[in-house]
Amino acid sequence: MSVSPEGLACAESDQGTVERIGVGVPERGFLVLRLSAIDGSRVVELYQSEAIVGRHSQADIRIASRDVSRHHCRLVFADGQWYVEDLGSLNGTYVNDQAVTRAPLLPNSVLRVAGHAFLVSWPQLDSTVDCPAEDVRSGASDVSPPCCAAELPGSRARQVLESIAEQLPEQPAP
Image (cartoon, rainbow, N blue to C red; front, side, top):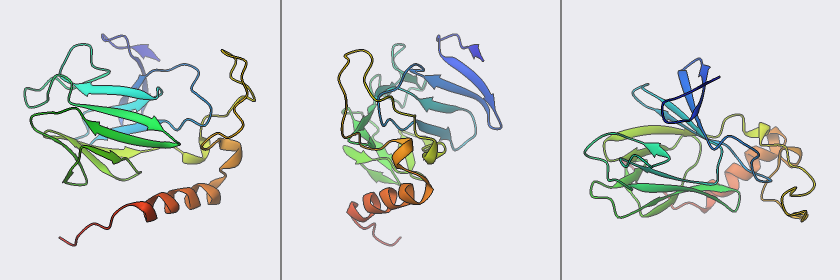
């Protein structure tokens, strides 16, 4: 493991260097989000529940390109699901070639930030972060996590994904 010039933890993978953002103790039931650039230029894993994507030097996921707004979009983990929210960008945020203001990010979706496309995945869904019984920071118990490794073995994970997919509007045929 090394540290990038931006202070991000980096590790080698079969796809090259992986930028790990927010590495630490994730929240109970948290799913890591992986964004793999379609052009193979980078892989980002998000270990925090919110991140700003943009051109600004302080963006969590920085894309140094003039077609990307300074604060282009936000990635948010809420209710056991990842979402992308456009922040009023000039060139738009797209999920599976549909312009969005807010949309869920499911595995195998393609997130496009202006002209930069990323394949979305949740690395090893059944390796969801193991959950402690209590939140050690507050001492409070979380009785109903959205999803946790102990509660989502392989077949259960598939059921959760299928139920999420059923709630999405149908895509028109090309």
